[in-house]
Image 1 (spheres, helix red, strand yellow):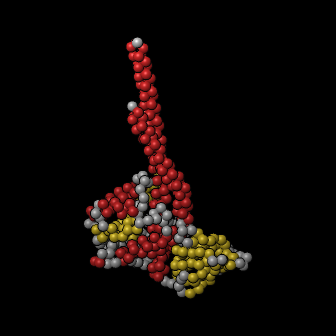
Image 2: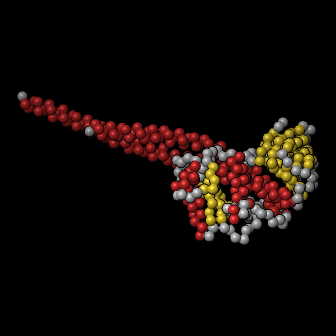
Length: 89
Length: 299
């Protein structure tokens, strides 16, 4: 059932910062860094402030700074939700 | 006679100046309303994600959390009122204030003490005039709310909620704000923010959609601990955005009808002044004719 790509959205309090499909998401939770690949089991994690790296299908990377939020994964949908978030590159 | 004409002209000029102001305010509100609505829409993904996450934790873990458990006895309740900073917005502020007065009355009848948290200068003025002290006031920027303010309000509200009732803490928190339904309709709404009722009162996920079994990192309690304050902030921020959009909509409507009224006034007074001018001319002519008659008959 695993579709080959993750649907990722990075959401801040006042807007959606970025959304699209990606191969991998790496984020820093309060427990440590975590990498998410397609087919990951549903998860809710609290994010430590730090960067979230999204690797796109073509290999290019998007880096966003997220502060004080959480990460949810389900059915290959990844949501990075933070009160303040911005794209770095 | 001439004095009458002068009075009318004065009134016309005054109505014209007023109209310029009201028209300008109408146009400003009309342009801001779009932006305010866009901000409400833009914050939707955030609140949807948080609501979903909170209900996921709540449904899959039987944790009794401070923020979700109903206290045995409610001694004091806090009411957060979202009004505007400036007037000239029709019934916008008075609607909310009336609603919060009623709520306060109801709470007092239930034997609860009421504490107010006010947002907007109008709310502050209203309660100060009635000599009801407010716990905290946030003024300025109601027409362009910032998340930072929502965060402050959320923290303040949580702080009094978590405080013991003996030390002046509250056991219940209500929010009163104008919900933006559409351009012509904004309804004052009362929501009980705390203790949370996560399961009801929030948009439930579709029936076909079953919440997956989540894995929590760290434990479910810690996740809930971190999520709930964020959830409250997002609810408050949403209330502020809705209130701002409503404020602009209601100001636009009020100013539109004020401009229309000024138009009617100008028209009426123009008629009256034309009348006065005409009768003045008529009188002058009859005076001249009368004078000429008198002269010719005197010969």
